[in-house]
Image (cartoon, rainbow, N blue to C red; front, side, top):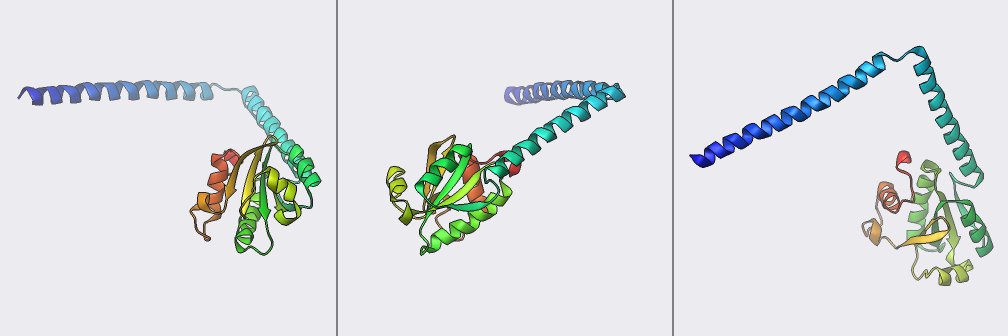
Length: 190
């Protein structure tokens, strides 16, 4: 009988705590609503001005990315071009490929889609056979390999499809989530 009383008392206390929490939240929401109701035209104008300023900054950033080659999936011809391009971008995904490798074509398809969707990240590919120095320096030992570069430094390498489920038919969204996990993509574009 005592255990039932304790359970009933616990339930009563828990109910009171939940009720108090809900009342506090309601008061906060009421306060926000009252603040919005008291806003004057000048307040709304200031909000609009701030919003326009944020939109202008975002548009300028997108234009800067576009000039740096973001928004498209391009091939870099040589090691010199690789180093020059990596200096221009804060985030880059570099696909080391061989033209005769089927899995490299699968990666090309996915990276082409992601390049158009994610202007915040540079997507490029490098023919591994034409860049032996880069392959040795970045320890490229299997193809396809995607090297993830942040602020000019190699962050991680995705070798083959193990990080992507281990199958050839992984969806683009899987690669997108792996890149997001490594902070190569910005969440606002997902």
